[in-house]
Length: 446
Image 1: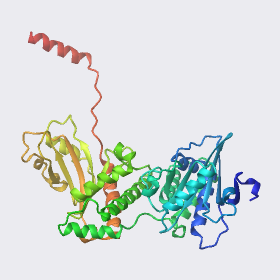
Image 2: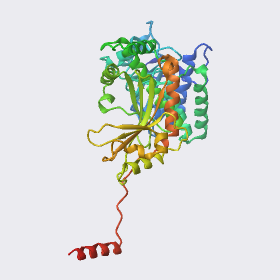
Image 3: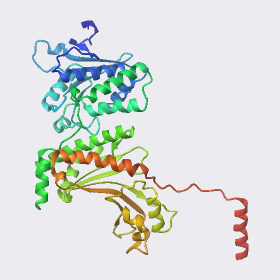
Image 4: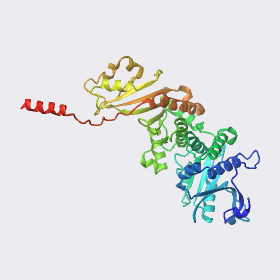
């Protein structure tokens, strides 16, 4: 494109193209150019992605995207060349972001990102956005610890390629793009990103440290407080749980998120510290997933001691049912699946009374089992869960991920999506006959 069309302080670059003229070996440049082009051409797509980094696109906003940019400050110097530049103009106001992208198995480099932060500061750029197959719980929780700990005042946001693909998928499935031509473009982008040639992939393999940690636990060993293997496993778990939310988002056509405590949302380092403690003390990994309008969060636990994956949901028992048996029957009527293998109900009792647990199949045959040893108590809640023992597959880097990504959606699809949270019925207005009967009863009592 003519150089006059480039931003003022950019001396070299090109407008992001839908059909970039690049070598067939340049997967990274091709994929980045196509995505950035669609970000500027498909308004809803750009608004959703940029909204995640704090930029709301109104009707007056104009988005321009460029690739392989070189700034005036870099003239005569050998150095890094950012993969892209995003410029949002609203009247006289501009917001700009440098883009650094990796595809396939290539990971982002913290040192390179710091250099881009410096470049951004020199040229009045507001932030850096990285894109790779690494996952982040949110755009502002960067997957690289050194990037998060940097003292630079230039923020760095992150999109995984799967996040980009899922954004396109949700917009298409919910028919959220108004313009037919833009819908067509987004369909083509979705088709492109879904093909292996784009270099986009989900999290599919735990690190070697996963096998080593499992070997330590199975031999009766204790996970050291400062275990580098445990830290690596926690990082991988965060990658996988984010991928799980994207998988469920595409399957349910809604936005599924990790349900994190507020203290962990604002402090990823504290989250890592707390989860390392849980892994050390209890030999388990866990996450809670929030599905819009579901009866409860979907709780997922990987237990290294038992080599099991558990996925379940907790429900409050209905207060208008006066016995445990009636409350359990209320729950069983909601479980529609015929395959109840490894499906359990944990009954929660008041006070210090310990929970009790039964197979759904056993309760369906004899609901009286729910009262055993608790005849004088009434259960106040239930945890319905599927417990799958994986054995040797649990310790294997790829099979663990494959099984987890099959078990969680299967539970939600066959059990979780059918569950309904109990709600107290609205109060009814008493008819005049009811009031008269109440008054007569009072007079008779006198």
